[in-house]
Length: 594
Image 1 (tube, rainbow, N blue to C red):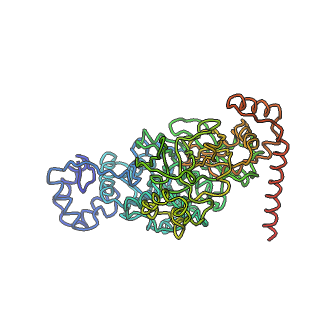
Image 2 (cartoon, helix red, strand yellow):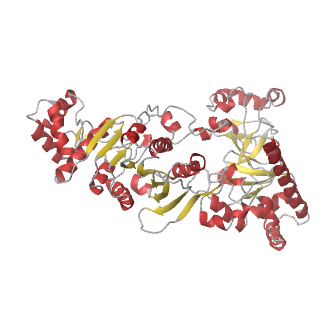
Image 3 (cartoon, rainbow, N blue to C red):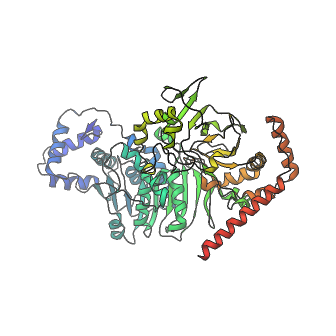
């Protein structure tokens, strides 16, 4: 049953009907409902009052709930909200003030009323008006069933969380014990923007990304993370606890930011939930809890919300290193340094329908199944993340057009040298021009990124950034050309096969695997990134690798894949890594001295 598109129980409807039918002034009605529910200004105006009176005198409508999940609006069921509040109650049983920054239908508020019997004031902020009414009805129903319980003063505020000044509440309640609890949206700003949502924060580079990071992926921030940081800035000096249901990626980012921000939070915990069961979504999320106004701590303990058990693991900072598993890291930290060889990301073109091809006997097919005859010179085999499953790869299922040797190269030459290819690209010029990323602005026609001399090296060692497998692949030439990788992959390029093979064996070793497991997050959108891979000190890993073991691995590689790699160049390889390492050290010293 619904009134104002908000669910209302028969008990509440009958109560309002019986008590309000003889009241003509909304101010008198508000005074009565303040005593009954603790809610200030149950009605904001006379119009709302009259509208509700008329609604409850008529048959109550039954309408389906609007689907707001696309906006990241996942309403927390009462059982889960009660579990979350009970966790707070174990460490902080008597707060004075409760603040719910995105209160939804009020399940966290009802759970708090159930657990915290001495609350003095509750603030609930919500932008969706039907949820505000439903929250009011739910609170009233709670007190109709719990008439003897003391009622806190409850203020339900119709406001956009991004515009609300929480510092006012922090200053108003200095010295009082505060709990912040809730479930903010689980989407990014670009997702809401694509839905034409007006419920967005003012656009800003709020995490201070630099250069290309600010205009590409890292500039796309999580709405929940924005709200968390906004709340921490307002309440970190308040007495109490901070607790929100948020994505694991947001929790990771908050702990990562601790190094630079040093929020005054401690006793930081993350209680993992089953998001599929609770919200029917495939997102890794947890109940995040920390103590405010404390000496800053820089690590988070991970637990299971459904089990009363000790920590599954701890992640956070070890001096100046950010790690995903502190216990594992203790046994592998020696490999944490700087890779002497530079990891690269694959080709980025944002035009897969045109640039990615399948090959038939006498022609190519693009991603929209158009048959195309093209010159072969600028077409290369292509690997995507899903292709990097085998230990050695020497062929591809897809191909890609590579119009440039380096980023920014002029592409006018294509029209003269490769007219078939030029006509094909030019026919699809609109698709190139419609690419949204600013990186293509004022660049030559058909420009791509992630291209350089390294792309054309014949041998590569590569890994998928998207998949959760700790598996490095050796990529060999195909049809007498180097194989390209797309921008979901990372690789090191080599001029000779031996160096590539040595690197492959070392990276797939148990020692490197354990190190990577200690610094990667399995719930990250990209488990492997350039920053992660550059932390592998390949020189240390290689220098400590026993020759007998290396020889055994190479023999297995040779026999399985019909190669003929020996240890002949091993010493040169070690010296090359050392020399490159020394260059890096000297360069860093030079930069510091400047």
